[in-house]
Image (cartoon, rainbow, N blue to C red; front, side, top):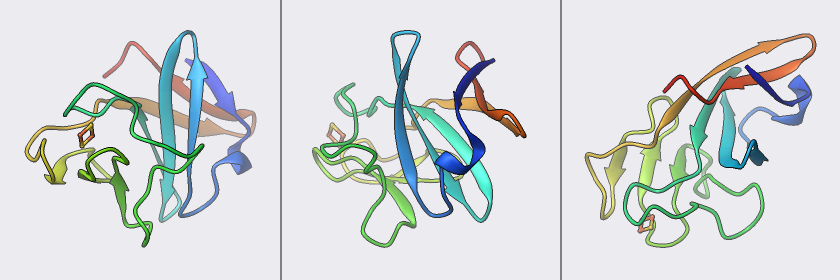
Length: 108
Ligand code: FES
């Protein structure tokens, strides 16, 4: 597992982008639960965000791709609207303890 950041660096209802070991990824916290995905839209294979750390829609209830507006469920990464509907973001195993937030880039 690779350490992303301290536990409090991904706040409730917020997202944050990372680049680690040459991989772009992002994490979201919803209802206390953390989720991590590769930062790669299944539509065009490009990063989702235009602004740093902005991966959510205006209501913070979905992940949104800034390029064509695809919407993804925070809990599963499934695209439910937009040009790649039915496809999914690649989810990563994530773990949190006193030391930080950890992801496994090999486990998808
Ligand atoms: S690149 Fe993400 S919706 Fe088109």
